[in-house]
Length: 180
Image (cartoon, rainbow, N blue to C red; front, side, top):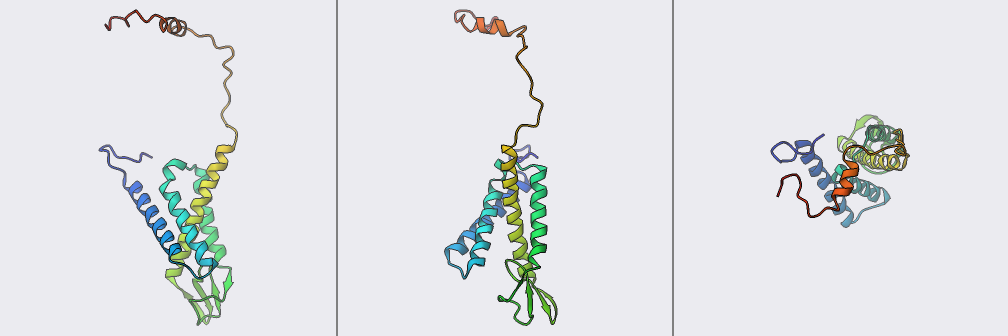
């Protein structure tokens, strides 16, 4: 996908990606600098900051289909597995079973209650985890051996211009075919 349009301006998806990256980095670093209450708070904001950094540098990563697939898989499965975690932390005090990681977003016991703010926060957390996974998949792919068939150039014999090019570079006093 081309990151720029024909008139030199960046494409809309590129602008949205960069704006989201700066927003996530800014929110994550600001919240980390103001202090937090516990390990979950720090883990959440570190993940958000790293996710924003990945979005800002995504043009350098150039993820593959496997990377995108891993990111989606981590996002969806993380959100699903996070709902299996039962906690007694804050937020849904009226419900004896609070589920969700990093924030409890689903209350069970006296009915079912979903807090959409925390569902969104959990989704952002797991999406950032997916972005980091995408970068890790790309790093592993770069370390893998080349999958193309190697070409043996041992029997290659230069034809046409190769012998003349070597001789011509030592003749500095000649012009280049009429270009004087």
